[in-house]
Amino acid sequence: MDKYIKFLSKRTNKLKASEIRELLKLTEGKNIISFAGGLPDPTVFDKDKLIEIARDVLENFSDKALQYSPTRGVSVFIETLKNFLLDKGINISNNDDIIVTTGSQEAIYLASTVLIDRRDAIIVEEPTYLAALNVFKYLESRLMPVPIDDDGMNTEVLEDYLRKLREDGRRVKLAYVNPTCQNPSGTTMSIARRKHLIELASQHDFLILEDDPYGYFIFEGERPIPLKSLDRDERVLYMSTFSKILAPGLRIGWAVGPAEIIRYMELAKQNVDLHSSTFSQYIVMEAIMRGVVDATIERARSLYKVKRDAMLEALEQNMHTTATWTKPIGGLFIMVTLKKKIDTKKLLLKAIEKGVAYVPGGSFYVSRRGSNTMRLNYSYPTLTQIREGINRLALTIKEST
Ligand SMILES: *Cc1c(COP(=O)(O)O)cnc(C)c1O
Image 1: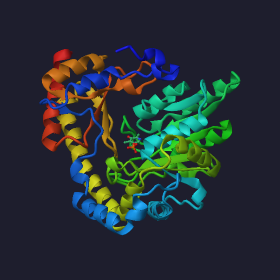
Image 2 (image 1 turned 90 degrees about the vertical axis):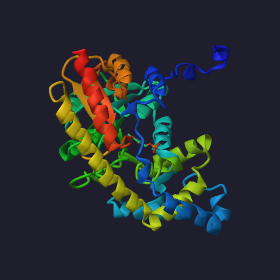
Image 3 (image 1 turned 45 degrees about the vertical axis):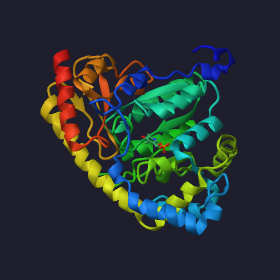
Image 4 (image 1 turned 120 degrees about the horizontal axis):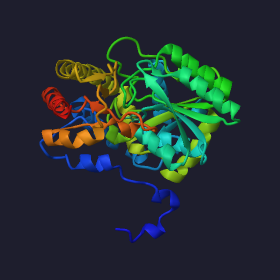
């Protein structure tokens, strides 16, 4: 196993498969109800329409769709994407401000490699999105966790933090936030805090990476204003994706931000994949134009709302004495906090024995907090699995207290 270690770069040597991921791998294919994933419900995908679109794209545009294409993205797709976003309240006036990426993951990676040097201070919500955390760690940044509550990142704590850092003569370069229906917590940042964060970014001269995969299918009420739309000072780099509103397998996302930064992301992207799949871009373009994306959004919204409600109800019935939990207005996740200081990492083995799995919350924390929390996914399991799984989980917890 260790034969090639001496060949690895120092950076790669530090990459470690998470022990929890290894553990969860063992649950696949068994009779275990998993709340551990983060997958869309496949019944949300419009398979028939996508078959039709794929065939039409190959018939009508194959010379282009099968060819190499510009690093920034296929220009007819960008025009369609801009119109789609305008309809959703995001106005992109300049084509230099946008780049198509291979999912938002690539946007996170490109922005990070362009902006982050070793030891740079990066503000993150705590808990935060694991796949972003891993990129920031890979680049050896210094992570500065700011706690979140029901209103998202606590910007008062952030303000104190920034003041102290400034007194020490240190500066923050970047804040990464997932303000709407956050992964993993399911919380949404209030408008007041969004405005406060933007103000702090101007006062303390840092940039904001806004990751917004869930803002397009809020279950009830108005969509919270993206930080990007509050940004008067060109400090926000906004990214989103078709993964949750069309199909993640197409791997199409995008970033919108200051032209200068997008330009460097384009240069970095040339090193990574030259361009995102031309074929996928044509498929997404047609899906937008034929109303398939909007229909998928509606299906996701109504199905996930029912599933969220089922999970909240099951939690209320089975776990109100042992735990508290968040009440997301969208997205795919609920975060549960156990009232007793039970280590959910240790509890996971017992849960798996009872036939249910989740992700221990500690994985999403930079500090050692969160050891009594867990992330539950409600988009993928069926309603029956949600009810039965929460039963099993409640039983596991009861037997451990
Ligand atoms: C699901 C998700 C994404 C999507 O990533 P893709 O690479 O576009 O599939 C991005 N950010 C967060 C926080 C997510 O939960």
